[in-house]
Image (tube, rainbow, N blue to C red; front, side):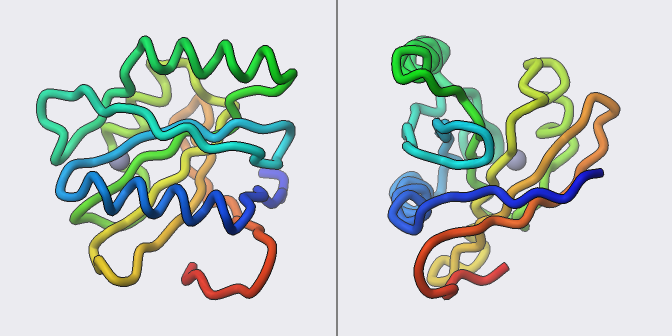
Length: 148
Ligand SMILES: [Zn+2]
């Protein structure tokens, strides 16, 4: 697996954490827009799963709109974010299955763990087409105050 960092500006990491906390105890989800490995914008999207405390399904209409915005900006969906409200920031079996069936394989999976509400953990992963998980280092601007 080649080593490459994934860049998320501090301001956007803040937006991602806020989105996760605002939806707690439900899982939240969203899309990271950008180019290559650089995030330029976060879209907080609606979780329409019927059991949102343990699962997520991104609202397909909002997802389509987000894809359209990315296209218009000459960028792409480079990351898919969701939160774990009571488990660690690591892809679950369901997350891996979903990645494989959704076809979003080139995207990074950003997971926010709210196990400790005052100390959210943000991690990024790649899931390849064999369902293998590898963690990707997140880079950001400014002081490095976020736990890894
Ligand atoms: Zn998950």
